[in-house]
Image (cartoon, rainbow over all chains, first blue to last red; front, side):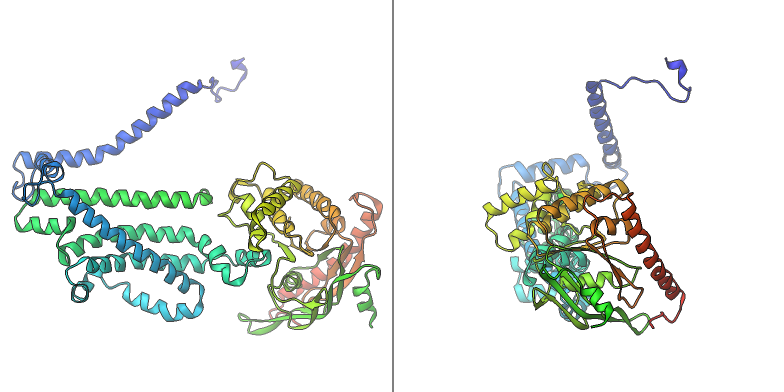
Length: 285
Length: 281
């Protein structure tokens, strides 16, 4: 049979399904392992450099020291010392500020972005303000935040909300302005009353853009919670970082950095899952 | 009354005219050319409440403008258009539009797309579900309720688009080259299904097409339009029993006649397109 086929076509039996599943799992494990090589190399380099005295351990502590400090900070019984068993309080403070600031930014960003994207007059009135304020680094608002809101949570809420607001408002406005006219007409001819268009057609159609804005926004929120806590409030992971610097506790600074990295990554994943679920209709569009 | 007008308006007196169109004009200002462009230059047409009208004409002859005016998406700039004796107030569910590009809501499932109009018009949930189910069945979409539009083929999408306007029980169905993006086989199938659905519950249809065979196959009358500025060149009645055989002698006779009419206008439209002045005589 097989010799009748031209030699370029390999005659091969389809592998059984079980073997396929096994191969698939192995391939996934392999891909996962490959992705660990980079971080492992960085960790190894860090370990080697600190263990063999390539860098001053007072400035860059070894990963073992950092892991130990982080463990103490997280799980040891609090004894009044600043970095013993207080991690969860600080992390919760930071997360709370991120959630509140991000929520404010999301509501304002989506509402104002929709107005800018849909109503020409709102675009004319509001867009110039947004475009002028947007390039100003949020850090330059710190003095005003402290003067108006004091060294309290509202100060952090303000800075975080402001930082997350711009990506959300800009993306929402773009998404809304790109709603296909055909869909608006379709809704009108099906019986949608004009005042319901925003809710029924415009916002659903702009959702992919809105979620892009939200993802950039949640990233900004974590950047700004650290800035706010370093400069404008007296608790949280950012405050711990700055405070640890005064005692030259570089291990705590690195532990706090890693903590923020993980928390930021997790919150981005949460937004991503929300977005995937909400936008399940757009997969493959 | 001029002979042309008699020709244009002359549908059977026994049937009720749903759409009455008199000296309808549509012009707009072309910003690029900086001049007034006349899309429709006086159109007289009556459409009965159970009549299937197909509209043929070269590109830019105002076919789509005519449909958009009935739909309420655009306003006429002269003359009048009445639906059951009243002017068109704006888009509404009594005039269902099927677009060439489907224009389905991509974030809604097939079922939600079809029930969209009922929901917007405040039909209670129970009746909504039942009517949606029946309509999905009528266009052969049972089993696809939970799919999203992007998961469907072009023919399936157009079925959804048809179902979502039919479920509203419109007085008139407006179709703007609805099958132009489909492959030949699917197109033939959709034409048959459209005729089936329409013959079960006859209502006015205005069906725009570029395809002569499609126009003859579907229409009670074929409105052949002139090149821009759009006027009615001739109305060709198709008195062939359905289902129509596209290879029959009488079908071909009409095909020859319509082709001849259209060819003149397509040539004129082409000559206009070569004329840098825009040929807006």
